[in-house]
Image 1 (tube, rainbow, N blue to C red):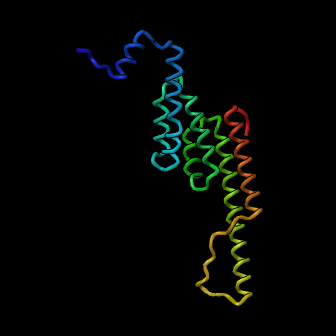
Image 2: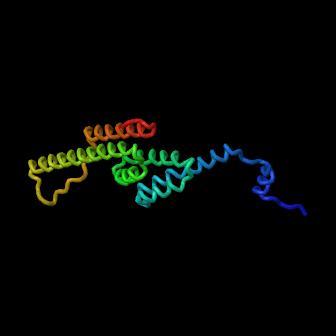
Length: 180
């Protein structure tokens, strides 16, 4: 009786003579390690990993691919800085993976984010005071008044745009090995 072969058996039978060259094997291994970088970023930013765990994960990457993976992780962390929810965790992870010569980028980003958040809080406070003052002028006052989060403002959007542009400049400089 004839044997029924599975698809995998047929594929294995027809490709058994094929082998990957050393160059193809290294490219596949490199791609495999680079594919893990977004997962590392996610775990670091979402608080699933402490910065030390990110360092350990990068230390497990073979030396020949470590720098490429590290730079991919840095790229992903820099992309997360634009979100206020993940900026703190992204900064902590950047500090962990930055080398001595790259600390200036982390310091510049820290100053930039601190100034942005300070300006944003100040603007929101001023907006809240103005709104409460307007309500009181209309005869509406008391402890029960709760002012919600401010809406979008052209000044706030301009501040955010400047922040994003500066982060992109630093990102470009860092990834190309330049100055902030």
